[in-house]
Image 1 (cartoon, rainbow, N blue to C red):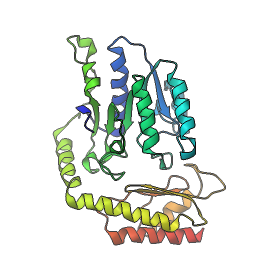
Image 2 (image 1 turned 180 degrees about the vertical axis):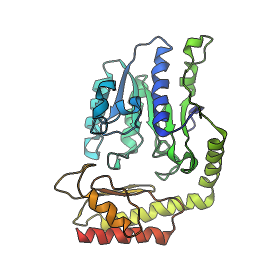
Image 3 (image 1 turned 90 degrees about the vertical axis):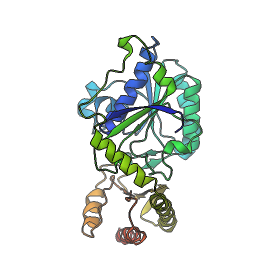
Length: 326
């Protein structure tokens, strides 16, 4: 997005988020302003480092480390019928005047079951945050580089985040690389002759030339006409498949945006990462030469952009057979 002006290199998505949080926190510290509270969205997953875990959902994945995690205010997930309620909840929290950072997975909560929410409500939240001088951090580790149909999920928005964390698709999955970008507003808080206002963060392999060369090569491929047309075609195929199965008796809901489609299966156990049906889904498809990693009772497809039309149709057909077997 056009408001981004500086790049900080790291080596994975969790670290890209951690860097974003530290940047935002130190932005206030460098100015001598007490705004230490962080707001996140319930159900979030931002990574497995301590800071990233702190701003994510408290669950079985984080229980062992709960004494290490810092306090965070969580707003409810903005389901379509709860958007106004969540906006009011957000306003109430920031009315306390000590909120310095708002972090979110842009439009899609991946690990929570590919839960999707509207660009309109995220725009409202960012606008409110920025009107109250709160730094907005977009976690685009999962959604970046075409996954949502646009280059970044932030391109669906009118109001742009101050800081963006990316990784995953940046090298096409070939090398470890993470990036945190920030706006000029953030940069200015670090431009000082005072060495103590330096952003003291670095890793042994930060911006290593092999990973950066892989990222440059991957980006050239991503922006090629062939790849961009494939992203559009996959998005169209997903929408057509959604319409075909959305009323199936075994399906609770089908969600899609761009090249992401998620099929939430109806289950008496409820929707959960630990839903027992996952034990059936994974081997069922693996035996049929299809690698799908379910999130509990949620089957999702994130095809590589090089997948052929007939290959994706084969995956859909197998899913339909599986649904019929339930």
